[in-house]
Image (cartoon, rainbow, N blue to C red; front, side):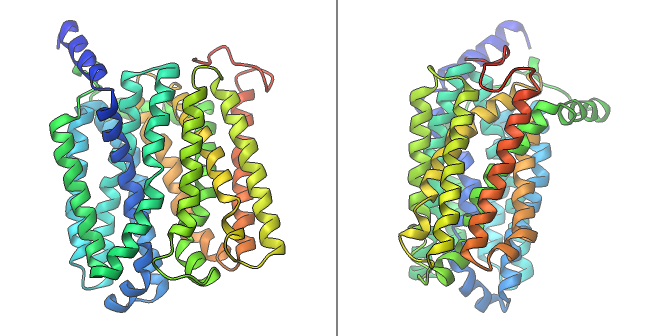
Length: 418
């Protein structure tokens, strides 16, 4: 493709980077959240229909998360080769098929199969959406766009379990997966009509095995990238202690029914929305590193307060969820800046870097779901301590990343993009 054609595609992408583009990117990112949280209220009925015990139903989360995390490693590299738009359309089609397999399941093995197909495909939107934002914007503009995406994306954890709970009550658990199929089908139509291609052919990279291996190697040995990716994973695991533990926390510890998940998720979403709005207001005035450090101060204070509440108060509303929106506020302040700083570590392979970045996050969540959550679910105090521990680890990783730039903590690195 000629330079003039490349510029035309880039200009078209820039023209589309308005509200419609932001909504599409946010919708693609939300899909991964919906596929986790929408069916959480249905764990009990799923076990009864499929003759499965609670541990087997819990592993359906793992059946989704492991392929979700592993395939994320490849989505960005494939998009670097064939373009962003094409792989998004392929991913949405596969997700639609996986949702229908789950809806038709009559055995636990069929549910696992559908969840695996969903896991293979759901990460495409999460990875490619971030790369597309970075394709068309830089600096404060990119942070504002990521904040806007975050504001829409933040609605998913509240809407998903509420939708799932009411669908379960009205028409049974199969309707939850039919809803996911309709959601992905609607996104597929919208992206087919309106999603632009943001990566010109002149900037693509062939899927040559040796070159691809070198590209992955260069990203994965980049100390700054790895530290930022691990820091992001730690923070997400901290909030996912309550997302993945929601069925037990809401129904057993708080003693509520399957239609009451909003008591947990709405406060969290409120914090996420406020954090995105605060980032939107400060994108031009405050450097990314100061925003990240401020977000971790909020998270640490909230997590510490949560430990104190659980240590001295039995699980009950509103006390058991009081600190969660403050933690979510701090988390959303940190995420867009962490993502953009990490992608800037590999400017020539943003798709591949986005894949690696999200792979760290999702493998962390899968590890949390499979191995750590059974221990934390024993009590609300353990859940609170788990959140605090993960946040502290993430804060240390951010500090190491900052200091690796040879700047005293509290200053501004020379490479900081405003």
